[in-house]
Image 1 (cartoon, protein in one colour):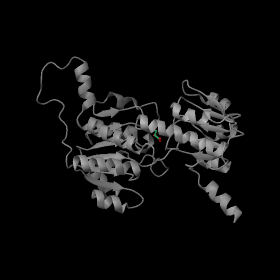
Image 2: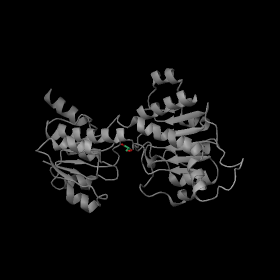
Image 3: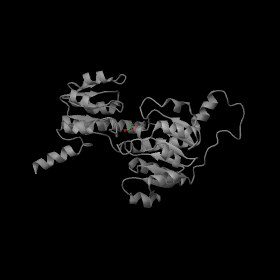
Image 4: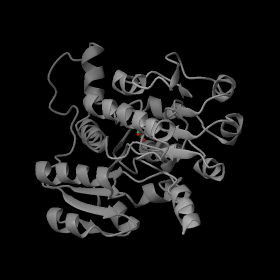
Amino acid sequence: MKLLITREIPQAGINILKQYRDIELDYRQGPPLSEKELLAAVKDADAIIPVIPDKINKKVINAAKNLKVIAAYSVGYDHIDVEHATSKNIFVGNTPGDLTEAIAEHAFALMMAAGRRIPEADRFCRSGNYKYWNAMNFIGPKMMGDTLGIIGFGRTGQHFARMAKYGLNMRILYTDIIRHPEADSLLDAEKVELDYLLENSDFVSIHCNLTPETENMISDNEFRKMKPLAYLINTARGKIVNEGALTRALKQNYIAGAALDVFENEPDIYPELKLLDNVVLTPHIGSATWEARLQMARMAAENVVDVLINNKPPRDLVNKELVKEKVSSLI
Ligand code: DGY
């Protein structure tokens, strides 16, 4: 059975797969596959491990006549047409939980970098502009006791909140579909409406999934509600924030700054954003710790082994309705 791995991943995952003679690896380690290359590569694949930039859309799924499982090398799966995969009885797996700490730590780093203007100060030193100490240069906010608003209070949002609460004694506000009573009492976190969160937070950090409801959720109106000295941090998905609106907000000083690890049309970045000093940009590296990336490779490999070798659904199954349907048809 053939497994297509579209890009290089840590060896820990490959080592798991190599234990099974029945799995024939088509392991691509070069640049991202074009749609044409992807369509050709999936033709006879029984399984795929795609990475974030691979668009596993209807066309790709239809071209993969033998496909049984798409084991995403990520926790997010908005690059996969899960509905279409489900309609064709193809399992979709992901890697939940493995990168909670990595992404929360990156959000924390971005908060510090934006607030304390680290990349801007670094550019200043390298460009030879540091000629004398200046009492008025690179001033940013003190963060101790500030308010952090978290949009999407799942595992990652809560982990970031813990670091902010225990490290900086921040007040925690959050929006979510459900209340999280344990976090509410441990962290004094308050579930509030989005408008209240935007109006009262010094830092707003996005940790929700990209869904039709959250797409373009933060746009001109939302920036107008934020404090003029507030910062926006996005380590979730680019399409949740309207990059044009963010650029306007940064240029017109509706907010003080932003830090982004994800973009509306990755890897393209809204050109004007790149010209602004009050935004920190990183290339989708939230999960880039050794621990997280090794675990993602292991989990994606195990999801494939579950289906191809053990003949069962992947342990981290996204389209759970496939299993429910099978169970209910047995009853
Ligand atoms: C994920 O797994 O969804 C992350 O965005 C990858 O870094």
